Amino acid sequence: MSHSDGAFQARRLGYPQLREARRRHGLLQGHVEPYRPGERVRDEDGLDVAALLERHTEYAAKVGCGVSHFQVMMTEHGTQCFRVIRAEGSGTDFSYLHCIAQRAPSRKQEVSQAFRRVARFDLYRARDTFFAAQVGTDGRVSCAVTGEWVACDSGHMDHRQPMTFEVIVTTFLAGRGIALADVPLTVGQDDQVSPEVTDEALGEAFRSYHTAVARLDFVKDTVNLAQASRHRLKPGRITL
Image 1 (cartoon, helix red, strand yellow):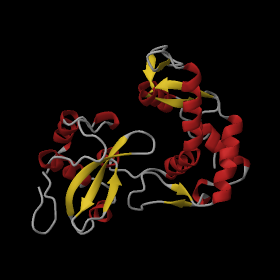
Image 2 (cartoon, one colour; image 1 turned 90 degrees about the vertical axis):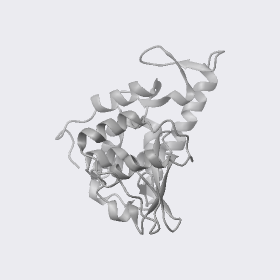
Image 3 (cartoon, rainbow, N blue to C red; image 1 turned 180 degrees about the vertical axis):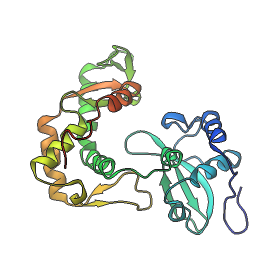
C-alpha cells in the first residue's frame, strides 16, 4: 500500500516465509500468476513482493525515491517478471530469482543473456517457420524430446547437442580471443530485462556464427529448462 512519502512498506519476511509467499502467489519457477503482463500487483501481494525486492543486490537503485506499486511485465524471452513503479512515475524491472538468491548474475551469465538477445529474432523466425510446416489441426506441434503436443507459447527452440547455446557463445568468443570481461555490454539500466551487446559488428558476427552452427528443436518449456542445467559446461573445459 502506498504512503504519503511514496515508499511501499514491506513485510519483514524470513526465508521460510519467503518460500511460502513464492508458493502462494505462484512465483516459483518463473511464474508470476495470476497476473497478466501490464497488470498492477494487488497491494496485499505487493507486501510480499516488496519483501523480496529488499533482498536485491541493487535494492537502492531499483527503489530510487520510493516505490508506489508493482506491475507484472513480459520479458523478451516469453517469461514474466516484476516491474517497480517508483513514486515519481519511473519504473524498472527486477528478477525475483535474483532476490531469492541474493546474488547478481555472473559475467558469464550476463554475456550469454546479451548474445541470446542478439539472436532472439532469428530464434523467433525459426520457431514460426517450424510451426508453419509442422502444426497439427489443433494448433500444436510435437515436442522433440517428450513427443507431447505443445502449443507455440508453451515451448522454446532448444539448441541441439553438442552445440548448445552456451557452447556456441563460448566457442565464438574463444575463436576470436575475446575474454568475457572484454565483451562490451550495457548493464543495470532501467527496464533492461537483459544486458545488450553494444558493439554492433560483434553482435552481427555472432548472429552469423549462430546461424551457421545452431541446430534447433522445439521442446516444451519444462524440458528446455531442465536440459539447460544438465548440459551446462563444466568449469575448466574452456577458459575465456
